[in-house]
Every structure is written in C-alpha cells, then in structure tokens.
Length: 179
Image 1: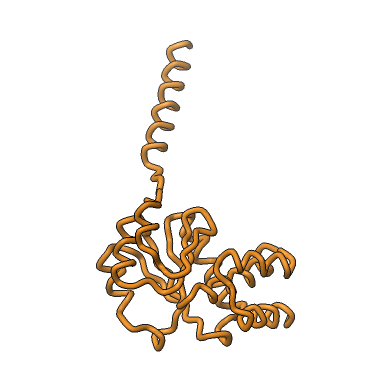
Image 2: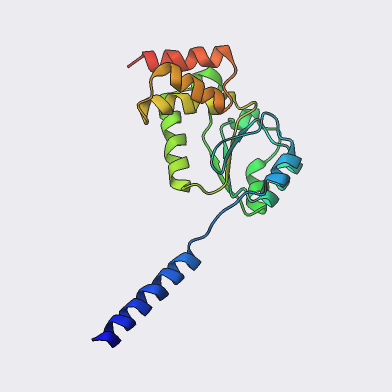
C-alpha cells in the first residue's frame, strides 16, 4: 500500500505543478504605465486602468506595459483615429461600448461594461472615454445595480474611476432614481 500512496501523492504534486505553470499571472509594468502619461489615468481596480482618450503613442506604451484589452466608451463620431486597428496591430483585444454623452449613461451600458470586465477575469485592461467621466458614471450605476451599494457610496466609487462632471453625476442619479 505505501507504493500506491506515494504514487498518488506524486501524481497530485505533479498535477499541482502543471496547474501552477499553466495559470498565467498578468502583471502590468507600472513604470511604463506611468511613462504613458494618459489623461486622467487611474488604476481603480487591480489590473484595470481607467482614463481619458489615449494617443496612439500612449496606447503603444500601454501595450508594452502589458495591457491586453482596450474598452472604448466613445462613439465612432467622437474618434479622431482608428483605435481598433492600432489595438489589433498591438495584439490587444478591442471592445466598444458607445456611450454618447449623458444620454448614453444607461443601465444597459453599465451592465455591458460590468459583464465585460467580469469576463476579462482581472487581465490587464484599459477602460476609457474622452476624460474618464463616462467610465466613472457607468461604474457608479453598476455599483448600485450589480453590487447593491447605496447611491452615495456608488457616486464615490464612480469618482474613484474618473467621475468628476456634475452633469454626468446628475445623469447617474437620474438613471438610478428611475426604477
């Protein structure tokens, strides 16, 4: 019997070693992230960055820093260059959730962002709009509808993600008041 127990223990140890080797750890190079100097850049959640619109050079630096996903909240009409093409060229996954100003600050868009971030499972990502205000607005809504946080705490959470605009804060309050 000791041979079987030893073999079983060896097999378990080998399986744990393989599982550990296969599980990838994603770590941002924060020095390079800092060098990018993206407008209103913050790291509110683990490997998730929130910001205003990056330039082409800043997006290249973020890719070098380890950002794997770009979530753009700006509608196509607001964009001055083909961010999706550059992200693809840089081997980054690109996602678009068009949020057209305060009218785009909706429960549906907040849920889309929440679901997408959950699917990324902590992999390094950049969520941006023009200034990071829409990012914060959607996070505030999501904090209430998905996490059950009360309104004032959700506003603070949105501010942590970039919500500074009184107009968009009012939009968040309006959306959440309309059950």
